[in-house]
Length: 355
Image (cartoon, rainbow, N blue to C red; front, side, top):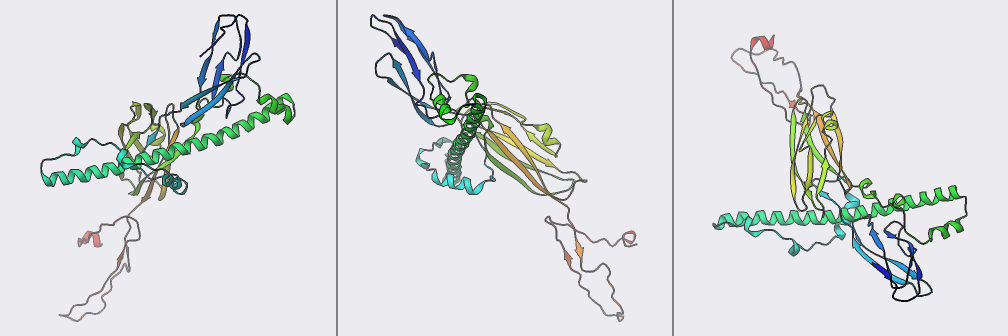
């Protein structure tokens, strides 16, 4: 905007950012200036939302002895966000947010032509698919909105901690009292970009941790999982998978890199867990960090229970004792599988096996 002087006397103006809800959300330049008669000065306002939310801020333009002019700035922060149809670790806290989010099913748009068919039976099957897709879309929109709220809450928490640290450091450096420091915080003018606490703060926020459970895997065997990674944000999503780290744990992930996945689009991911015969039994976990450019951080935890089939018998020796000629004696053995996986067994009557 412009500060214009239509009079014949020059005046000075200055920008008062003391009304902002948090420092760094606006940068106004120049913060102070002089406008000559019949001249105007261009003032640039830069908006740093810092979080994906609707934001309304105010600042004052003070001109000479006149009453300050209030300027209102309205904007919405957007970011690149992901949604994966996998279970999460923080179920209790996340479920409360999901319950508070209301998504109208009628607002969800699905292309009907994808689910049409000529036969009545085919139409019924297609409608089942449409209903399933509708519910999945509702779940995706509900959980992505809950993720947005989680991100905003964590950013607010980070800002409070950061501001407390900045306040403490300034007090130590300037060796001033709390009263004088409060006066410094109300100083007029713009916030330097180098000191802006909102720059890049969203990239350090962990939104959620998904869990991809492979279940039981026999040592030396492998299992494969396939799921979709959806871009539910307003920006193209770009991220790289650290495949070298995953391979150390026997996990392979495809694709290795996603570049500019458009909003409202998805990509299929295939994960293979290959176990080794010399690995230890029990639960194995590996966490994959996913850093989205201009977005937040996500974790995907891959879990597998490595085991071996094992069969135990009630007795390893079968002693029939004395059996009368022409008679038959039956002895029962109990086979028991105490492991998590099925055990296939067979009976061999070969002499070399019995020896």
